Length: 77
Image 1 (cartoon, rainbow, N blue to C red):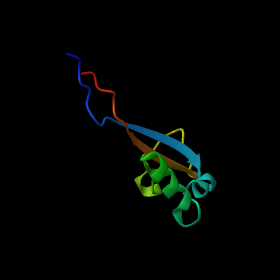
Image 2: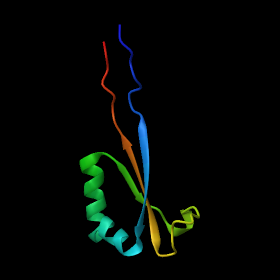
Image 3: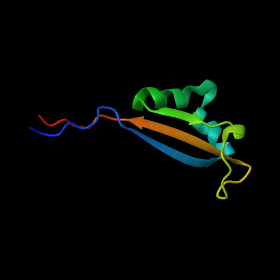
């Protein structure tokens, strides 16, 4: 009998991008970010400035992008 791993572990990725790049990620009326979500199944958020934690590696013109991926581990029987 093999081990069974959890079904839906999550991975959280945070990216720092320039403010001008955030618009490119979002796309016109949110079309690009919506396509990324639908294609990958990931949760993608460009965090509002007021919800961005302080970090010495970010400037005032940077934005924080949060990506949460879910995937299934192969099961052994």
